[in-house]
Length: 304
Image (cartoon, rainbow, N blue to C red; front, side, top):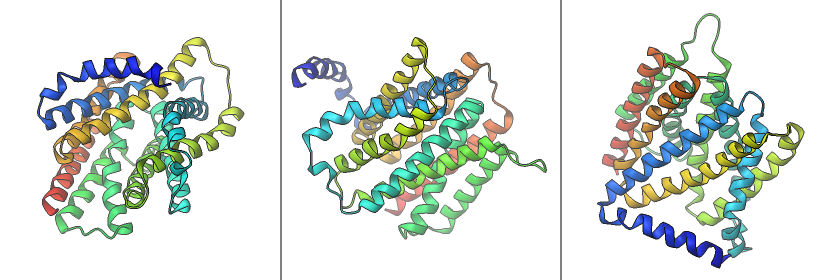
């Protein structure tokens, strides 16, 4: 395995050499924006597959691809990689990870890509609430006000009426809330469990849950659909790697706001590939959510 990875590592070192000459925040910004492009490209594949391939099958192949990718790391650290001080919390985290993935994928398949992406930004608003309630973090009046205004942006996008709310918008919000809960749990788990342990349980448990669901809903894919499903897995790994590299290189408060560039990529992909023109409500609501999220991030930094 080491001999097979050596050429890849050498190529990666050559590609990264020019970046190492740049300031940390600039490198971080490049990585975060690259991650945004990669994740949005994966969302485009999810949307394209949605007409014939179910979410369960897509997630099964995605998870299998990601598990195979990280398996050498898990094997190298086995059995220490599975030693956790809170098995219950690991299982709870996987449950919310499932909610996050299923909710976001269903929204991507059935909503305009820009709308689904904008609602996914509500994750930062949910993180604020969950961190205050569960981790007992202290929030001032301005932080609460920013969070409430951010949820006002969500209402602008969702546009509830007497006829109700789009069910897939609710799926998108459930996905954002699930992702926020995962972030809060990881923040707590990281105080006593290693990163490899958290990664191992994510890979193995989510795969175990997805296996029967994916098999039950299985539809034999065409070669192009196989390529797109495998591509989703590869892009997920690449996007997460770029995210980690971005936060390692730059300050979180400086590079995190650039994650919202995903909205621009989502609008472009939706317009070019799916002929989706974002509504004024989507643009206005996403601007409100992004603005309040950045304000919250800055205020947290000042508080620390």
